[in-house]
Amino acid sequence: MRKLFLLFLVIFLAGCSINPMGATSREQIRSDAAVAIAQADKEARIAVAEAEASAIVAKHSVWADVLPTALVIIGAIVIGALWLNWRGRYALAALERTPPAIVVQQPAIPTLGQLHQLAERQGMTISVRGDIAYLVDANGEVKGQRLLTS
Image 1: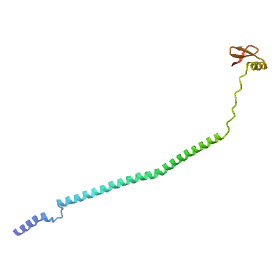
Image 2: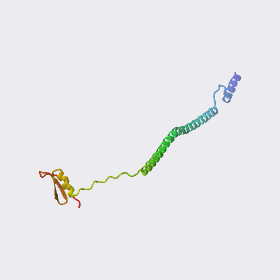
Image 3: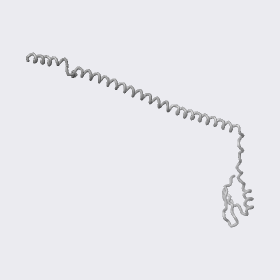
């Protein structure tokens, strides 16, 4: 019995280093945790790099979409400005080639004698007071006036 007890005692004490039940040791747990942390760090770095790359691609794709439209608009503005400039030059040259328009002269201011003749034709008279000639009808009402010039 004593031998049996010693045998169990030796197996029990030897079991601390052999790990007969398959339990993991602290070193194994630590090494597994270090590997898991390293793997998670690697995956996080890959995710960050992919996010940065996709942001750069998105920025360049926006420029690739906008740039042709912007160039078309700028080109249309430049062509329109050139067309207006040349059209204005052509119109100016055409104006310079045409003869000047006929100037219509203002009718001369009638003299006092001409005013008397006009009044007699209408059956009225001219009354002069100072520098103003008044057109007076048969009833003595003033129908018009004109400033006389010297």
